[in-house]
Length: 161
Image 1 (tube, rainbow, N blue to C red):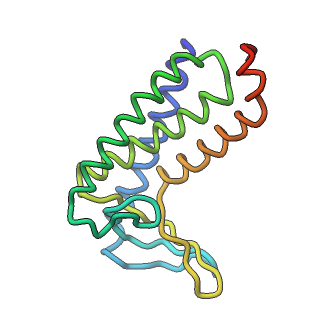
Image 2 (image 1 turned 120 degrees about the vertical axis):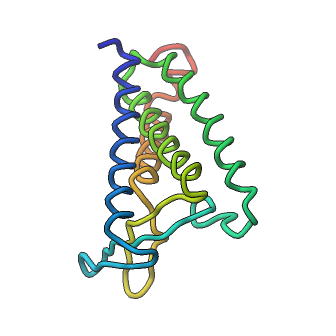
């Protein structure tokens, strides 16, 4: 399998896992319905029309197209980066996770005008904002990208991997 295809397969896997998990939640829960799984974790069905932490959620609807355009623009840049770094391991892993997460959330915005969130972690009555598999992939991808930069940043600037 060519190296670029491997990274695109990872991004596709993230999209499929994200969409399958959201389909299950949509079929199993009503809006705002919650199921306590542990003392610190619930499953809950919520829609987020904004970005992280519901940023711009109450903006009146224009934000949907802004976030779709932003995600598609970033996805194009990620694809370009994947082509240039396909022979590496850490950086394309991070790029693929971010790409898959971005596409997963774009699909939601186009289908529902919002992102389906369902993972609810809490402690002592304080809840982290609900999120989903796509958000998790983006977060892990960004952490890996930062790790790559800290680990290889100086070498990359001088031309060595």
